[in-house]
Length: 197
Image (cartoon, rainbow, N blue to C red; front, top):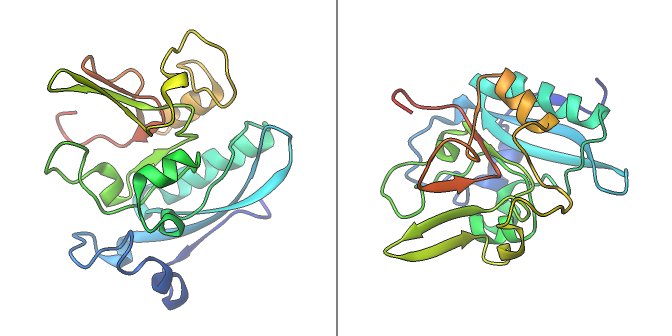
């Protein structure tokens, strides 16, 4: 479909991510990543251009999912490289930016995130927060998303277990962080699991 394409990471794109999402110690070879150009619609039905970097193993599937979301006018506010936020996950989430690759660890661990391998996609993260209790304290990320913790409420950009976004990702063998774990919820997060997940 016009407006949707996959390409390798050329020098121009690499210059945008080097030292940001693609850190000096990145364990993933650059050749394992792909650059996606795509279209998406916001709540007003306006067509916007987006870009994302992901693992080559999921690039075709992710692009197909975004094509189908676009055709269905599924609302996504923005899709920008996380490097526009200096690869700061909190800043990207606070701006409701949907993204994929960022070489980083899982929050509160030393384990490389699935985002670090380009194998996880976050969709409309402001309205679909990450919620976990750490040392008796509830953590909600991004830190401006507390209004969206209560999933019984109706609000824009909310992902639910039976909505189109969930169905499309599940059909491509992604898991959804909204129903994977008892001790935490990650409503924005779709990921290809590791063995044992």
